[in-house]
Structures are given as structure tokens and as C-alpha cells.
Length: 87
Length: 176
Image 1: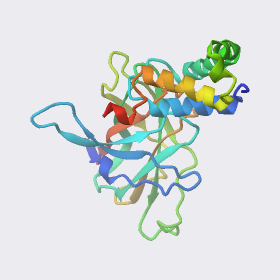
Image 2: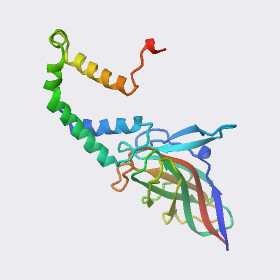
Image 3: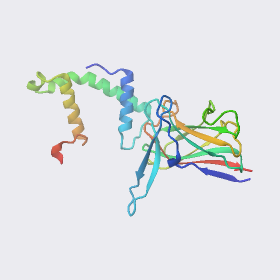
Image 4: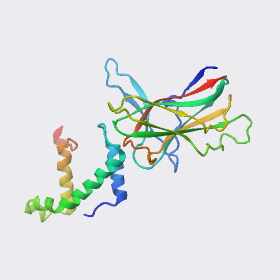
């Protein structure tokens, strides 16, 4: 999983901005720097994340499956991931 | 001599067709959070992300009492407490029997600009911007005119991350 290009990071910032419903208290350039930092943090910590996974999952799941898992956990934490069981 | 005002309702804004260099802002209905009853209004949301200029237009016959000094008044808000929005506007004008038809006439190459900060106290408080218009194509009373309003989020001074939501626009001028 490679670092995003600057274009991809910029477009990530655009998508983030368009998805917001809460007030924002920072400028566009500050948001871009946050995207840069987040992408770099993911790069720096992906080995740690992988190691934290139980071996049965770690050795059998694809990289994409692992990333989706991480994203799902984070989205569930902020109430963005809904399931049919929630209804 | 007095001040004349032409209301440019958000619902009367003409949106471009979305082709290259003709991106349109979003027009939407907004319901207030007040109760009994909650009033509704329309707003035009100009994108704060990306690098695409979004714009809209109003066309009408300029009143016969128009003399000079057009100023575009824009009332807007943003779901942010930090950042500036750069508004830009210009006017194309056609006098009856001009060689250019309304179907082929061009807007002035340049636009007039104003940079206004969002309200820093609370997101979505109303802000008013004024653009003193000089790129007006020598418009005169009784001309058919087209007002072009746009936001270019790639402008270096436009730092607001989110949509700028326009709720009212009017054109003020000095009468004869």
C-alpha cells in the first residue's frame, strides 16, 4: 500500500470537505496538511497495525480486506457505519 | 438621485449546463430548525473544494432610472468559522439593435472581486459582501444585462474549506 500522490491527497481533501456536516474551523490549506499527515501516519504505522491482527486473520486476509476492516472499525466508532441489525 | 435596488432571487438564477468551464453551483431548499412553523428558503451553494469555478447568472432589463455606480450585494453563510471566500462578478450588456445578439455576446474578460471572511463567532451566521462593479460592459439604462456571479476555490485568497451558501443577491445602483 503506497503513499498517495499529491493529487490523490488533494482529492481526498476535496472529498472530505464536501462530506462535512459539522462546522469547520480551519482553512483549506490546513486541511490539506492534515491529509498529508494522515497519509504519512498510515505509511509509518501499517506494520504495527498488521502485527496487531490475530494470526488467523493476518495470514489469510488480503491487504484490501485488512484496510476495509480498519476503516469499518473507525467509521463505526463515529456512528458512520450502519448495519441492518441497527434497525 | 437615490439608490435603486434590483432583487436577484436565488430561485431566478440561471445555472450553466455543466459543460467544461460551465459548472453550476447547487440550488437547494433549506428548512430552518425553528418550529411552528419552520420556514424554508433556497440557497445556492458554491463549492469550496476542488479547482472548478462554479457560477450562475441573472438576466433582465436594466431599469430606466439606472445612472451609475452598480454594487452587487451578496448575503451568504458557510458552515465554518475560519477562512475567506472570494466572490467575483461581472456584467454583460446589450443595447437593443446592437450588432452582438444575446446568443453570441461575451462577458467582459475580467471580473470584479471581493474577499470576505466567514463569521468567526458561529458557523452559518449571515455575512454580507459588496462588490463594486466596474466590469459592466458599458451598461446603460434599458439595456438587457446578464449578471455573472462566481466563486473560484483555487483562488489563492479563497481559504474557506466548505461551500459558500448564498441566500440573497441584489444589485444596487445610483438612479438618475
